[in-house]
Length: 355
Image (cartoon, rainbow, N blue to C red; front, side, top):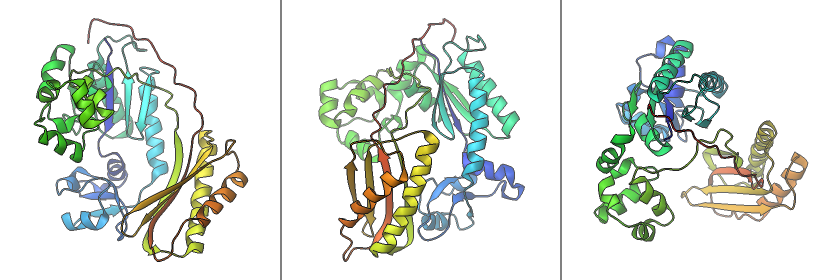
């Protein structure tokens, strides 16, 4: 039996801004930019009451919440706080899998404190995070990643929820299908059309039928409906790609200006590749037009890209074959992938009786 904790910081970016600026506390704020092409990175809980959420266009957010305060992001500060929180995690286990700056999985089946209770460990971690950073975190505890992730959302914000082994079957059977990992609006609608509304409904369907309806995702859905998720917590998650993109305040179709913008994005990608010690072979350019249609162009080199002198000439030539005539561009991006990673090491788990 594994003991998995999922820690999710509450409105992380917005909470950091409210912590550091007392004038913002208790007010609806959004981290991002309020311009026409701006997007909300995250919103405080005061703003969420109005329906404001991450990835929402800034103009839509302003319409929903006229008193919304936009705060420019300070990613270097968020990274610093995230590192501070990660050090707390490592006091308990080396099996920490960061998903982003504000959330992570921890496998505490065997832990540095020799504490057999995962729920007590989660409570201790939340207390330490608040004491050391002034920020709140929500935690979910269960026997696998699928359930721990769901549990961490159950009592947000600043909550702890545990799904014990003997509760798993009943919990999953009554769980709304929208709560399952990977089930978005489109998939949920398709499930409803097939009379699948809960985990119990999903459990009644065969794996063959689920694969027919939902493709490869059907395998995971079949297992998750039974509370099964065999994925390990991977402390050394491998970088699969490095990319950067920008959305213009005004649409562009001038090839020279677009190439100049791509040059700056490519420089940023190269710097991040060096920082992360990640070097891939495949360059991909992404273009999104004013009508929201997107295209991507990719080219794979015979060797890994380790210098900007290798990178940019190829990207520049790729730009030359993209047709911009009569089409306005709202977004441009570039990325590098295909590093030929080694498989992640797997860890065996030791069963403990107390959960």
